[in-house]
Image 1 (spheres, one colour):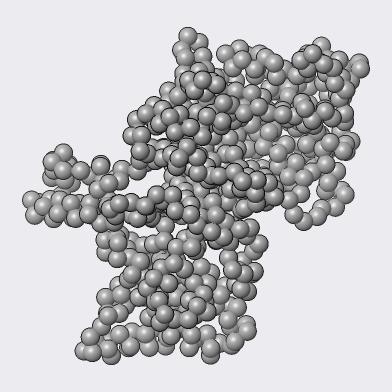
Image 2 (image 1 turned 120 degrees about the vertical axis):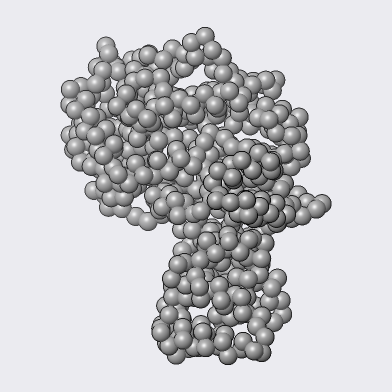
Length: 623
């Protein structure tokens, strides 16, 4: 604590103020640690993510049970919980089915219970911290209500007059909505997002808006996230890849409407040179589209695939250190016979359109393509909203995070079969383990600071993180996008995983990773990226509890494979708990009585003594 004394002296006006702050900091150390949430692989599924934040992954309903016990019926508890999760919509639904008089009576009746719950849930935090969560227009009223909820007979009239006046001024609904949002905030003290906010889902932009509104959040970048970050750092191949994936999953709305990026020149180009082909039929997780819409997405996907492979060929040529020469697939094509030589075999190519490819120089862009790509670059870099979102990812994100005896990263720590860390050589320097992830982060931050440079090493590393064998975000021998489009034989589609994914089952391997990153052996690793196939008996808890994989399938397209719709890892003062989710349909189904999306909880670790702030990373900074 002494090291803060001089800092406090310089920022506070007198000795008395310094002493008060020291007492405050020491007292805070002995409060229970706040509740941390860990989620991963949100994949643009805003509705499910928003619902989890609103209900605290079941925490709010649990707190209602703890506090009110048998004083309230289960139906009353459920109704109060829904009011807290979706106050505006729940009140509107009540008014529609039961009338305005009932709504006013109900809200007046439930208000004291909301205040009691606020007092209960806020009791583990300082009054100052709770006060900061209160909306300014109701701050004084809520503080007074909380202070007087356990009122004496002398203040009974004072309390009731406050409520009566709130009703008289037609502020009851607004106050209930404000209290509900404070309760939501108290349920989650800190949120960790272990990668992949982006992917095939339609609303990553709304997820990022929501994250930016939170008071305490961090992100460990995923492979899909870095492609968007790469696009805003000037990487043309990342931009083209984003458009291709968006066309594949019928998600152009995100690019064109949410981010205001004009794709019309690129679409016109694709329609001029490509005809719809079966291999490029868009994949729909839900809903239907017209034949015209399907054809547009099909043609755009073809055009961007060819552009991507051209740009990739040129990138591989200028980056021999990436050791990706085997992925210069256009160089392996017999254009006359429309077939490709891979390994020891020749494979016919299906639905392959070489109209815009020069067989002698397959990486060569036409003058029309150069102009279209330059337009695309300008349009991406001009998107103010996307710039804000990528700014947020760089400000709050990292390749990995050590926090409260937990090591968080999205993909893997590349390894050899014997458990040694796999290295990437750039020039004369080898990077492996922690130094590899530090190198990646340093370089891509450098690239973002200079988006006009598009062929430098820092910018090219965004693509390596997407496809590279030694990428901690990819972790496979090859990205077989080309094979899946153009080759019928599914044996060529296989993407062999890095040894890490097999070795992470072993406690000694996990202990070695923890040691590499400066953590004690008793710490935990939190990992995303690979969906856990619980439906096939896979366990998300690995290496005797040292490693936890929390990708349970937020993305609708993965839910049939996992049997679930995601996980939330919850760390509170009592220990660690893994919460599994059922599929989220929509808000209406929740409000009309769906049991919610929490399917089951499993205890991973129970603390022998309740953890305090002094046991956390923040506590160590204050010590």
